[in-house]
Length: 151
Image 1 (cartoon, rainbow, N blue to C red):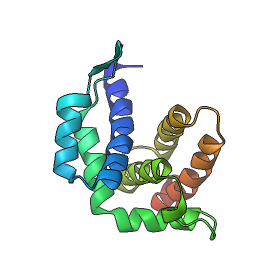
Image 2: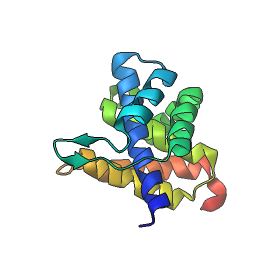
Image 3: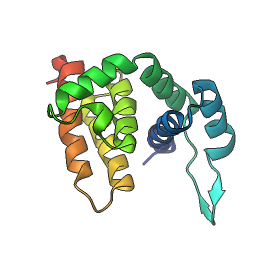
Image 4: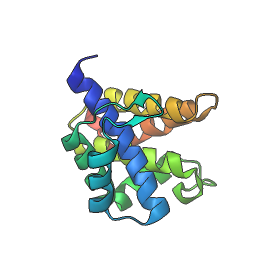
């Protein structure tokens, strides 16, 4: 994988983490973006070095997810079964759907790439669970709504 692609992939993961952190702590967009860019991108934890994230991709995803949260949440709700609205699902998955939704509504990246990238993130958070298949199905539905011309 090229350095640029790896940095974009890392930015997607960081965006999910940042959105989760914002929801759980009430931090502002500006505060969480600064924290991630200053302290998380490329940081070393217990001998493991974190990947360097692409700041432009990271900020675009976080900002769009916040600014278009109602639209993204409605798309997600339509992709979920009626008994499980977005506010009832796992907060990590909620953050993931918001970050992925932000990229889907921007319509700058092919839906297949967005789905693959965020399913990989789901696998990182839920390596033993069924969540990656769930994420794939929900994102496929969201992509068809956000970018019908690509299907």
